[in-house]
Length: 269
Ligand SMILES: [Zn+2]
Picture 1 (cartoon, protein in one colour):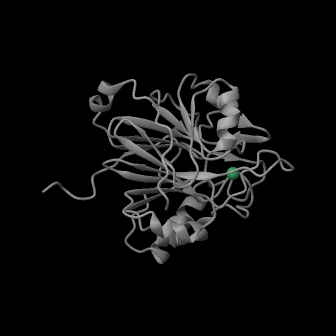
Picture 2 (cartoon, protein in one colour):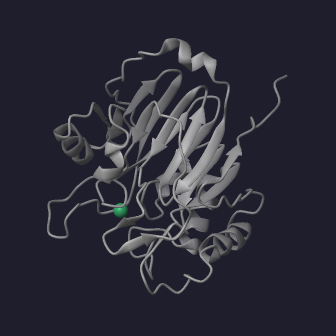
Picture 3 (cartoon, rainbow, N blue to C red):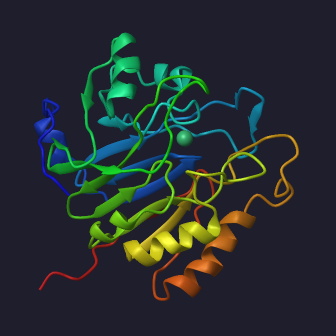
């Protein structure tokens, strides 16, 4: 992966980075996760509403969240870049691809633009944009738009895939503590450019993380999806298939709203 350099977000709270000795992951719901590593809190693709379009939230409402230090936005699709949700996070800087930056800057937000291979720093963390195989255009007939994923690298290495299909370059994202992988969505199908439980399990085999956490499931549902009576089905199917494709990788299933502590891979010594 090339190593171009993005623009750094000014570190305006230098003492805060040392104040919070937390490594924690929260599955807020859909693609929204809170990644807390080395005193920095990053919120991915915030979607915090009860409905968007004809799709309603079936999980409990998103609870109170600590104010993140930055927002990571993977692409401009409406379930990943939701302006009403972002308005609840006024003043928080964002990181995203150019199509995202264009929209968020027009709302007055500070945005660091990254394309795959580029990186920026937030306090002690490196945030690296990773490729994503996904058509990120915001309107069906609109111009092509980039989609990216993110690697958050500090004392924990956390990969947030955004929306993507499996791609060979996943092999290069080495030594991951956590891979946050989409395993379904809000509709009856996970179409091209998305992962279903089978393809997400294939991604785990390429990524070989310590933990593979399914996301993008169980939060929103269109009216007649097959799993509506049991929203955990896609996550459980992912867990089963990951054990086949990538035995040894632990698959913690967090329900929307749940958090887990992230432990270091090895004890110091
Ligand atoms: Zn998308």
